Length: 87
Image 1 (cartoon, rainbow, N blue to C red):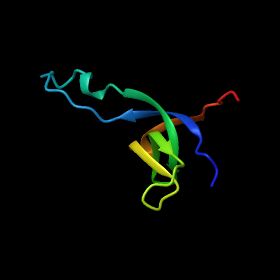
Image 2: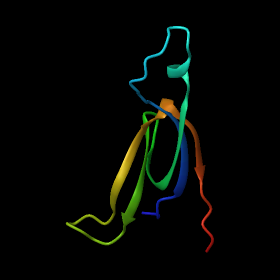
Image 3: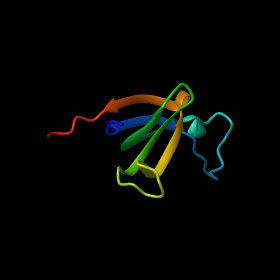
């Protein structure tokens, strides 16, 4: 299996606050754009999963291990960019 790609993902995230605002104010309608980088584990029609760590060392019979991952619903993703790593 090939080494996973290093990627940068940008998405519009869900957020909340307890600030009271008048009905006409757009405070809660503001987009919160988040960027994260990591190793691409999954990229399909439903989600993008990136992880901060991966290892090809054999552990409990598995040849590839990922950890510290985040799953982002595909509909929230604005941009997925492959990061070029110098050799």
